[in-house]
Length: 113
Length: 172
Image (cartoon, rainbow over all chains, first blue to last red):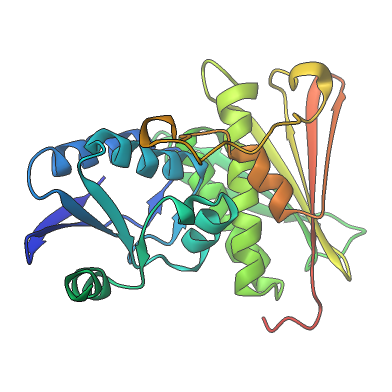
């Protein structure tokens, strides 16, 4: 599981560079997210632009990543592609996360708000 | 019917795909996928399935619906029917009619509890952070994304049939 990390305007940006977060990848994804978010800014934007497919195991791993960060910190999502967005909507997990159309929006809208 | 057989080679993530034509049915509109099922091979099966369903003229949106539902169905087989080894043979029979696409999976794993589809409540996501659900969405997604789901246990095999309504006016 490949994640790349960056910081912009004091916000951590974690980019998933794999195209699938599925049952075969869920455990590695959780481990990689723990490593990527263990330290650093309280707000993390997870850039999912390159993820074309997620299943319920992958969804559970994203939820687990947010829970691991704890209530004092925040995990926002950006760049959900069509099928990924469908899974978040159907499971109503779109109401649990703040979801932005892009990382730029996630960084800027929050700064403006 | 096109019969596809995916046989694991020395490297179990790679597949040899063989095709042969069965007489008596339309090769364009029905096909079979067979593979040794593992969490890794489910990916291969799903991408193969999606490419073939797409080639039948199914819209992108419906291809996504089908792939998500089938991911959940196949993951259930690997993780539950084939527990604890998480591997065993999978067979998918896909047939496209005028108004629906039907996919029947067959496996030789453990039966569903009570020999029936589970009746599960939607996982509660309204509580505090610590109580957010990390699972339990699989059957919910399958029901949401299909028009019909049927399960039967015959001769020590599980048969799960998922039916997707296909809108013939959908742009491919």
